[in-house]
Amino acid sequence: MTKIIKTAPVTRREFIRDVKAEIEHIKSHATAKEIARLYFGTFNSNCAYSCIYGQMTGCCDSRRAKILMRKKYEYLCVSASGPINGDYIKPTKAFASQSMESGSNFTALEKYLYMTGTATHKRIIDYLKGEIKTLDIR
Image 1 (tube, rainbow, N blue to C red):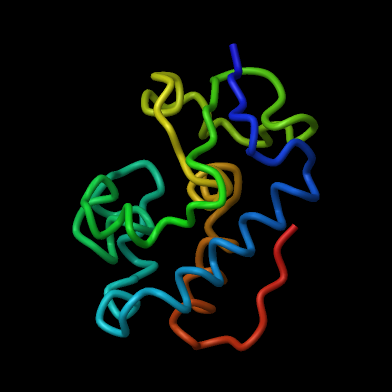
Image 2: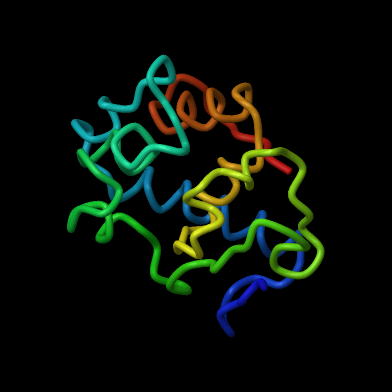
């Protein structure tokens, strides 16, 4: 069963908008030292220590990580099957991971990183680090 928080995005367009907003939020609120810790070579969206927030703060459950997370809506609640937030269907097997099945909560960006491949992960990290100037995600 998929539970969607009232204020969570309900369409693909809203979901992508929130992913982009979360990326911009990180870019403007994370310290240079936190951004510098991002490293594509050890990035793992399925690990609390080497995921996007984990790399920057040591653990995605840390107090600092929670501060860096946008507060527009709390989290997206996810399930291992079916549509996510209306029409955004899971395109990869990443949703079968234990953490996704357990009903854990994820931000829009964390969810997006589960749904996309390494090329997109690298672009997002490169954008956050200032190595590329524009970011096109869909």
